Amino acid sequence: MVKKYAKGYRAEYQLTHMLAGMGYMVIRAPRSGRIGLPSPDIIAAKQGRLLVIECKSREEAFTVPQEQMQELREWEEKAGAVPYIGWKISREGWRFLRLKDVSENKGNVGKAFAGEKGISINEL
Amino acid sequence: MVKKYAKGYRAEYQLTHMLAGMGYMVIRAPRSGRIGLPSPDIIAAKQGRLLVIECKSREEAFTVPQEQMQELREWEEKAGAVPYIGWKISREGWRFLRLKDVSENKGNVGKAFAGEKGISINEL
Image (tube, rainbow over all chains, first blue to last red; front, side, top):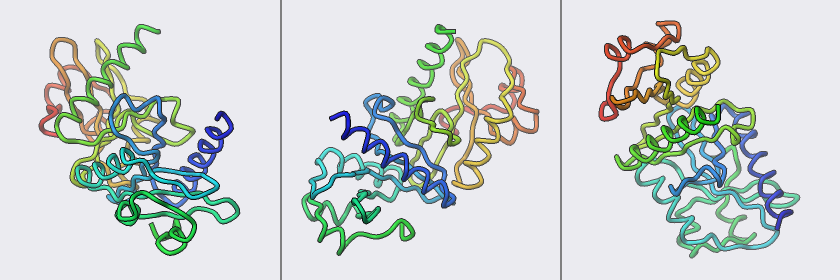
């Protein structure tokens, strides 16, 4: 569990710095800072465009919990943010799935789905 | 020092929830989450408009450090955010100063200045 947490932390940390390197201003919202309000893992803004990203670093297919999708949806509707699920795939790198696509797939994300629907960091 | 920190924390917590109550999506960025990237105390977004706020809860006049103003300026220029210094004044409540005004005043904020240039939370 500790190892899993550390891996997730490293992945978020890496993505934060990749986005910063692309000219985004970035906030990584730590769990402890959430004080009961919905917050995605990473918030990035560039020239008025706001991205909210829930990060995953699983080895295999996963299902995004309903409450995380609802949280992203709230950021989309109220804040005007563009919501993504970011998946760091071992030996492949990051793929980003639009919330709409993941939601229509009932939260299920696997490698075929990510290959078909996913975009790269430069397409965010 | 611990007391001062707790007071600042309570003020940020209060402002976070006031903004959430007004329909903003809000992130309070804890110091520990900053990982070397510039980040204001509070980020709030509503319908595509992004606010970044550095919070103060001093009893008396204060000077905003140059590096905090620079940080807010970076959010303004790169992210397209609207930057404020938020001051919780005892027995009066919150006043918000535009970065431009504070910057032109060399970072100095006192009660007369806040009375003249400050706006209320509803004017953000």
